[in-house]
Image (cartoon, rainbow, N blue to C red; front, side, top):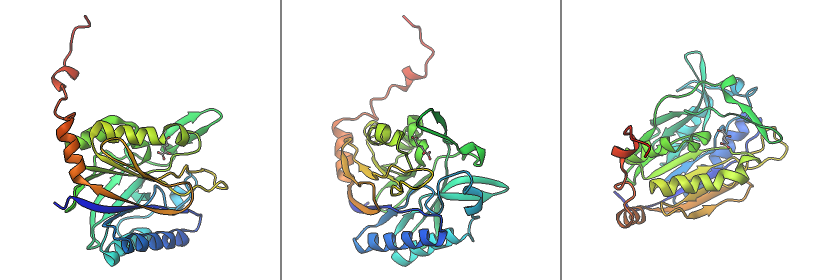
Length: 278
Ligand SMILES: O=C(O)CCC(=O)C(=O)O
């Protein structure tokens, strides 16, 4: 495996115009490839405004949906691994919040359906109920590239440490997270959560948000960022549209895991035993 590669997080401006959203995605992927990136990632729900009243109208079926075909075409045209953010996916009468991942040949490599639906109510802050329109996925999503093994999760999925740990135990080196934290939870938890998952599992975490639009019904936090297995922030965007790049150095990951072997020091014999409380 190559030990170092460059990735891009495309912090896109998301509008109510699907075709314009796809043009934004195209321009960002083109820029990422031009800057030597081997992998590009787009944000959560990048083809439609984030809101239950939009999801059914913008939903697409694999493989013929407009966004899905566009993503496959972009991956192939630019010879890049493309984690296609997420879009509302329609399948067998249900809707999912789904990330489609394409390889440089334009073929589908993986599909992640968001596992943890964002049903929350913070008075004076934010309320959202994804389960009003969306169904939950039920499986882990991992794929292998010549550079490293990669896991995909979507936004609220990152708040469940068990999920990232399960993927780490299945060998991921990098977690790509299309996400859209908001102006309540973003400032409070975005950076802390990404760094915690990276540090605990000694993996890179690449989280990609839409750009902030203060006129939108749901205001995304922005601040796309890449965190190292040491828990440091390697790069972080501000809130406007951006193509953020980072060098992912697998040698650093292996060095850290050798020097501080957290994953090897786990004591599952203790955690899952029914012990006494004394
Ligand atoms: O966990 C959060 O604070 C935000 C989650 C979210 O916006 C989502 O899952 O879409």
